[in-house]
Image 1: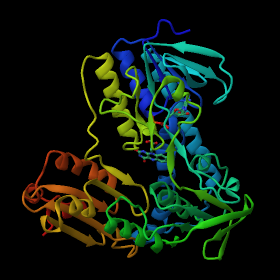
Image 2: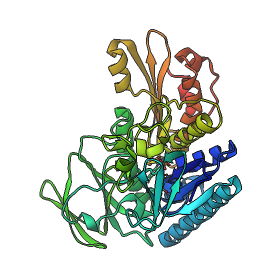
Image 3: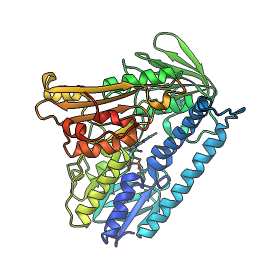
Image 4: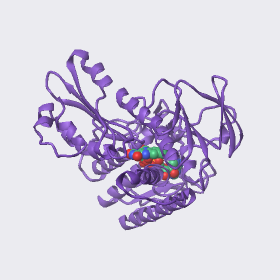
Amino acid sequence: MGADLDLVVLGAGSGGLAAAKRAARHGARVAIVEGDRVGGTCVIRGCVPKKLLVYGAQARHQLADASAYGLEIGSVRLDVPDLLRRVRAEVDRLNALHLGFLEKAGVQLISGWGRFTAADRIGISDQRGGPVLEELSAPRFLVAVGGRPARPEIPGVEHTWVSDDMFLLEDVPSAVVVVGAGFIACEFACILRGLGVAVTQVVRGPRLLRGFDAELADAVLDGMREQGIEVLLEQTVVAVEGELGALTARLGNGESLACGGVLMATGRRPWLADLGLDAAGVATENGRIRVDANSCTSVPHIHAVGDVTDRVNLTPVAIDEGRAFADSVFGSRQRQVNHDLVASAVFSDPELATVGLSEEQAIERYGVESVVVHRARFRSMARALPASGPRCLLKLVVEKATDRVLGCHMVGEHAAEIIQMAAIAVGMGATKADFDRTMALHPSVSEEFVTML
Ligand code: FAD
């Protein structure tokens, strides 16, 4: 099967879908193999359902603020099962949309788990790693199988959730322990808190959100604690006992936490198991597929994009990598993805967004004498009447010699929307003087970016 194909794509997530549709648009005959639901992590168990839950959690905060604006709201009933149902229905709608997009693009969908049986063949199974039911051959392959959550090896870990499970829940328990310091851990801690859950977040290191600007991460920590999330730093969960719904998380210091669920948000790894990479001769390093700047693996006719390559693990990056591959290979338009200056956000409460170098990264690269930091910390006007809620922190990291803005960072309301636009200026090499020359739009939160001393 597949003698008339130009490309077989493994994985119908962000990168695979983008590549398959773009290659088909360039005239290639494309098949895409998907073992689970079309849409991948982002649509089915990542960005999309997560952001819908973030909106759900925020709605509760908005109701709490209403009285500060003269609105008397009677009793409010929180129906988390209904919210979870609605989120799943939206995911179903998007899944159907993506199936339609594939059909419209003329991409052949093959349901099943694929693995290389040779460098020019992929076997399809109805279970991952199961017996091969059919084989596809093609002159080119794209591996876009993404990543999956990694759980620590501790006793009782089988009783815990990973992020995938959160979107399948029918309801949430009254108390949850979230393990981890990364963006997924922080986002779920805030979602659950917003839905009325008592949340304890257990963090192994001394701070949240390693890799982000430390001052911003601390501002998120303060905001999360202010809304009642108990964050335990330099602490670990060493065992989980009991049954789902009535669990005990044992901590490294001998104490224990009673809860209804434990979410292990302790990192993600490229999903390399049962891919037959050895049969194809595809090289890996540090648990990911090794690729060059053109997303080409060690085998010239096999490319890989997205989280399986563990470069910048975000949906827009996977999409751009997929499209750049298709444009270069099938569209005669050689193109490489720029992995610098990728804006990113943490949809915690308060929200964090960032583009460019953190203060620590700038100092490491240019030296402490060569970097100037400008910051504004304030309570936004939206929080004036409620007289509560986290403060905003806006920060510009500037290279002294050139006045160039190396990093633009924010914690506060609409941070992601604001930084998305600031990323254009930073990407164009804007200087602090360019920011200052821009007339402020008043009253707004982001005007502080153009009025910082
Ligand atoms: P995926 O989207 O994971 O797709 C891989 C697909 O391959 C899957 O459908 C899988 O079933 C399939 N597959 C795997 N193995 C095989 C096989 N052998 N045969 C056939 N099919 C196979 N990114 C953002 O930009 N913004 C966010 O807000 C954001 N939030 C996130 C929240 C969570 C909870 C998570 C987990 C991730 C989030 N991400 C976010 C990251 C984003 O989802 C990923 O970076 C992105 O989905 C990667 O795309 P991909 O194409 O590499 O892989």
